[in-house]
Amino acid sequence: MAGSILITGANGTLAIPAVEYLLKKYPDYTALLTVRDSSDADPNTNKLRGVISRYSEAKAFIYKLDLTSLSHTHQFASKLSQDIQTKQIPPLKSILCNACYWDLVSDSELTEDGYDKTFQINHISQVALVLRLLNAFAPDGGRIVLFSSEAHSPGRAILERIPPTIPDDLNLLIRPAVHTDKAAGGFHRYLEKDENLRNITAVAYNPGGLVDSRLFDKNTSRPLNLLMRYVVQPLLPLVHYANPQMRLGAESGVDAIELALDHVCPGERGYFELLEKDESSAESRDKAKQERLWAQSAEWANINKENTALRSAFK
Picture 1: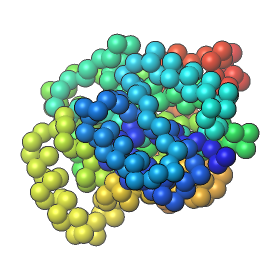
Picture 2: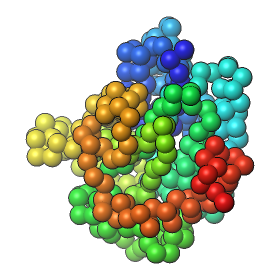
Picture 3: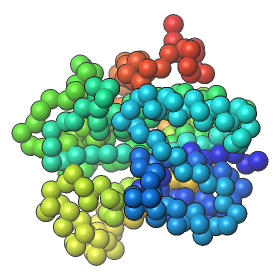
């Protein structure tokens, strides 16, 4: 068997075309697709089901995964790991940490775990998921794809009004300060993710600015929503000419699958802008900050030497 590809946020703007590309071009792989709402009431999940139905030989499974709950995330990882160990599902070839969330109109919202909702979905729960599933990869390894953006480098994003930074007090990441400018504070909360690992290679992937992203439909101001829908999207060829980062989710979805299957820069780690190897922001390359954030992230995610294959990282 070729292996399994796990995609979080699998009913999203980038993920749905990525799933279709995977099922069409690489049908030997098993697609493990997580969504927040797996019910028939969710139109995006139904769209995902529609894609799967077009491929009669597809090996694709949709799972409910609530990344706002660490207990649910750990339960899901335990069950999936068990299913792989008992050979009900092929070993993992790749994990694409695609699920994300932002809120540009409200103050920080805390989850049941007491963490900022944006930071938990975008970072903490996906740290927990990845580290719990390290033992679920095949012996020859695989690749973990963590999604990033140009917004993680200060001064590059149009929406930036508070420069992204890793604060000295890491608790400000899980319980951010209140900002009078809701959009600025929300965009700043959206900007935190990280990566790690070994013959399972880990890459951070900037898929570009997805002008058709559903993120612009919820938790954003009406002017921003209208700008993206009626100005930026219709004028995309001109916008893309001025800024090649601006593109559609379908384009980035194809690239994400090729990167996940190790067809792009095989065996390499690090940061990719689209499919070009590049350097991430200067602060993200600060080893002391990397180590502090790594240790704290594992603690936030309830990861210890008993529940991850990466035991050497814990005392």
